[in-house]
Amino acid sequence: MNFPGIPGFPDASGSADEAAPICSAKGCRAPAVWVLAWNNPKLHTPERRKTWLACDEHREHLSSFLGMRGFLKDVVELTEWERNSATDR
Image 1 (cartoon, one colour):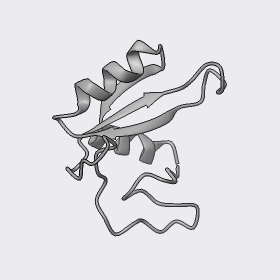
Image 2: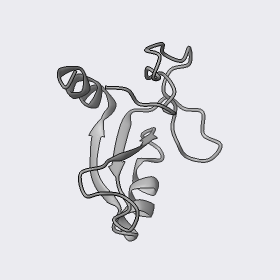
Image 3: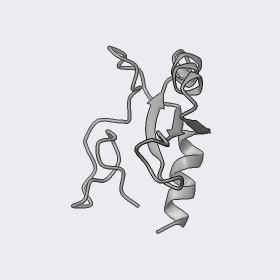
């Protein structure tokens, strides 16, 4: 499974970015620890999941932002997300 646009994950060519995954919060360069899976039901089919990455410091803020809009579907540790993604291949 590919995660284009997420630093550190393979792109469509199969090569990974050199940088480790970082938090999606504006201006944050901390390593990502969490994956926030979400979708906008007005734009996406119910099974589609977009992802944001979060460090420990920004997990709650980003989760609240998505949750208030009804977009947040799941919050998973990055290591677990990667493990589950590997088994989906």
